[in-house]
Image (cartoon, rainbow, N blue to C red; front, side):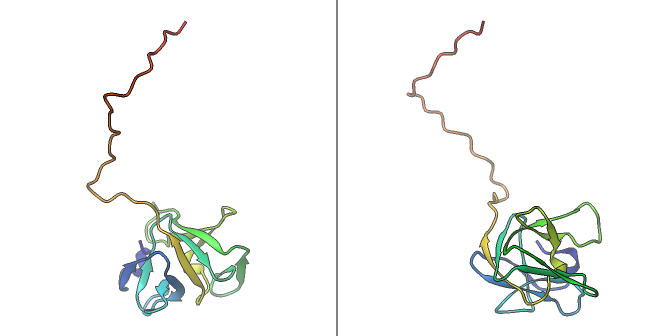
Length: 143
């Protein structure tokens, strides 16, 4: 999923093993992830997608300071999704801290390690198969 502010940008889902790069998309003030191959297409991540950054992660507020997280791994997620017209895409780090994707410094490379397990729409959880010839253990009466 891509942040609300990238609806006017071409998008596609992330693929395991690909390298993505933080960038500001043309015609927006929003940063996000793009493919190394085509920086004009936003690569959208599902909550739970795991990333490995090439270096410790840097983020800023665009005007005053830049900070570094002493971590190279993170998990994509959403924060405060119930608040409209706000950036929700964020990376959670092992120490429990979050950084909004739009605050990530441009040009950082990350590899998509793993996508979350999702169940296709329309499929329901299968019930366990009952095996008729399996012996059962009788329940003992309590007290």
